[in-house]
Image (cartoon, rainbow, N blue to C red):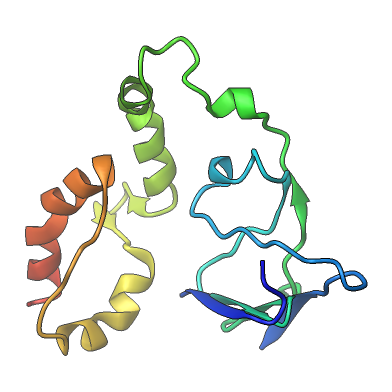
Length: 165
């Protein structure tokens, strides 16, 4: 929001740059899901693994750390087709009930491209690339709220085992 401030966000060298127009204040919203920002804007840029976003002096830069020769050098601004009503409670009595009923779809979306049914393996994305660094830590702290907290509790033992902590 503040053009003079800066913010760096990493999502584990090419660049997408967005500049402020004239001297107008610029707002950037960073979220893990597009539904969190739909009430503020319908124009989004989806960060991918190994992207780093930086906001300095009102200018957003997205750096792609790993890029092959055929990859486009930047990230495109996309217009969301969803509306605020699509993320509301709908016919559910509470957001928790809605979240519970959406869990199967969320699990499928989360695991898409990570499960190999041919050789019965699961690829955890960038985790294996950073195992040595993770193993150097003295403790692993998972911070979350709501359903994410329960997911963190459920996987805390497995993560410590996988990372040998």
